[in-house]
Image (cartoon, rainbow, N blue to C red; front, side):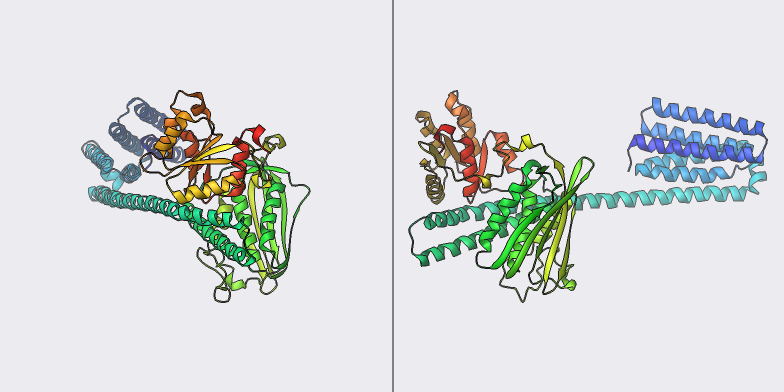
Length: 558
């Protein structure tokens, strides 16, 4: 159960404790001279035991030797202390201690050695045994107890090993089930996101046309429903990752003010048809720049604000941020207070439980999976914090959470990549040209239409082989957008062919992965394969704006 080295240390420690008890007993009951004699004997046996353990590396030999030395030392001291019968009990203790190996062989070896020592005692100390134990019957009882104890330990070890094997099988089955579930979710996410890219992209393009008010209303409804569906897919994926323990916290430097400005600006749009004011305050002692997982911090805040907006028809929603230094860390305290419908006290325990919504009958028209707050709870725990709720039914609610962050130097946050891309203005490009590669014609049309809104010239092709052929003679593209999942040559295979060329342009042109896979670590996978970055489907225009600003030559940006 423990390893060999740790087990031997425990056995030696037990040996030394037994010796110490005997020596102490001799000093207490007899004169100092006898006590010193017992001490010398104990030290001698202990040194031999330690040397054997250090020199001989075969576990069985070391264990048998130590068992024998312990029994001999205990019995020798027993002769001095007139407690020879105690050696049988010591043998039981030694045998029991060997169960930490979880091997019946060690127990059997120690039992055989112990019984041999008992027979030696019988032949050489028969009269002494009788005088100290009362009779040979008592001594036989001690040995019978030793035998029964050893047999019981063998049974326990066998049962325990069988149980451990069954548990290992169950754990393996659970791991395989988790892997299968994550693979299924990744695949289903890809399959859902691919048509969602078309739906969201086409409605985005349609909304930019000169439509009648009624058509714009229809388009707005489609866009809103698409975002809800995408949010549900994201929640299910996040919950599955949290449940399987594969959720990763990825810290970056970020500006707290940029984050709050951005998320409140997004939420203001959802409050356009409500008489609700939304504002935030940051205590003066809170640093401007922090180091932590900005995306997950944003996700917690987004979920809490979404709930507040969902259940608040008029009044206010307030965000308050404070914090305090804790050694090298900084603990951030955030609260979201609203004047909404509030929560009954009986429902407090339900709100952080997966797939649960309070007042579900009364507010069944409010969409959602009931996963948002459960995800918030798990995320705060992952970031070293917790989340709490205070509420008065019919008056309002206050959700408070804290997370551990670190301080970030301002110079590290000022770079374009680390600033919040949503804070940047819409990019316009003059003379820029990109190539989009995707096996789905609808997705090509969507990408082409969205990229043209930036002023780009957009060429398209339907596969990796066609892309390679185009790039042999055309070196005018500023960026290549390459779909990941394609037949024949997928995105990674196509990239390897491009980067494997001796042509300097092909080795350096920015290649961005287009993917419907949003599982944790996907960016790291693409970067490791040689992509410069990635864009997820459905295409987010703010994300795309950031990618273009990063890779389009500066002299073409307007």
